[in-house]
Length: 236
Image (cartoon, rainbow, N blue to C red; front, top):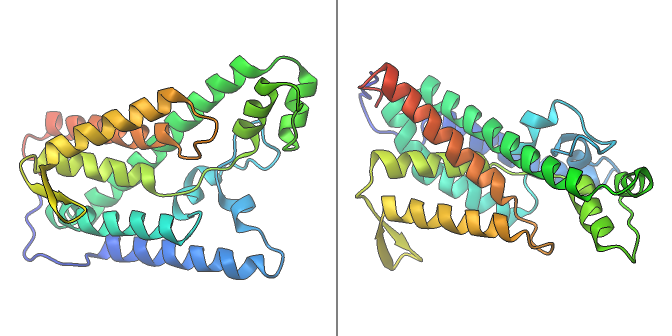
């Protein structure tokens, strides 16, 4: 059992994650001016995409689409993650972060692959999708193209895992929505999770949020917490 000697507002792992995500965001903008597309290289592409590389399973959760995406993910990581890292220690927190991030990617890819297999009508349509093209008279072709050619970026899966852990470990802590509306952490997590599940099942083609990645982070976070709890009743 880890017992912190003091509470740090910026513990080591949180600090380094903030730095890495920030550096990669600004590198993406800077290198784009020189014709180097870091998103193509480091974002997570579907297995059918010609841009897929195994390393993207890790690199994608250090990438972000825009400054707003980066800011809110890093703010939530700092706000909730610092408490967990101070409680668990650096090694256990980093383990949790990586497993929830990879779990988020696994569920996202699994759901996307299931949808792709449902939509494949013939090899010609799949070849169009790999090129980012689609048959304008076929809605399935459009959706298939979106699934195959749209990369995924962001630390949101791990952040949702961190949010879940916070809700489980500190269920009655009050959170303030828009800094005004109080709600207990356990209810906030349940409501947020239910909204993500509803949005994911709605499968709106205009929605560019990877809802099942968020749910994957929460699912793998829950399983890991239960595993730790089973093997050590004083895991926190």
